[in-house]
Length: 177
Image (cartoon, rainbow, N blue to C red):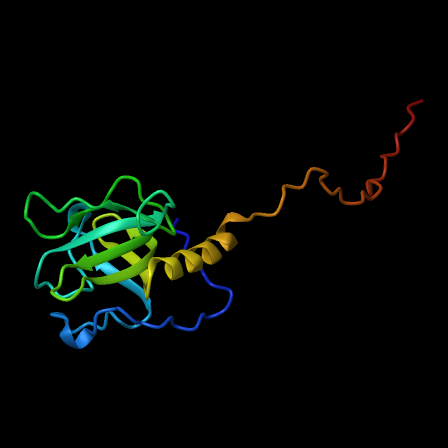
């Protein structure tokens, strides 16, 4: 069973500053629209990208780390060595991870940030986004995961239903003479 983080209220779409304009994308799909986007994953390889295919690119999982320049650590996903298309899905991937698509561009790199929502083997990787920066994605992931993490405590004192007296009547025994 797959559990999806469901916000208690509909968040306002974040600003898309720094996100690639869909008009410049090679795809006709609107990757800049905020929502849950599904990326195709045949054979555990993400083959779609919200960024135009022109130029070299990367995909990574990112998390805050004060010891790293810029404050964000990055685990790059390995490009698919068999076909040279897409990125291998890492073994350590969790609901709520912040993912980054990137492309090198003259004048500045393009980036697309999202939150991992779900993964269906050999079908879809679902990511909510885009977010303008990894901090915005992480804040929303924390909010969504808070609802998933909490479960009410187990009842240690089971409630007992009030018992009713037995409604059966004893049989009358016949006395033998």
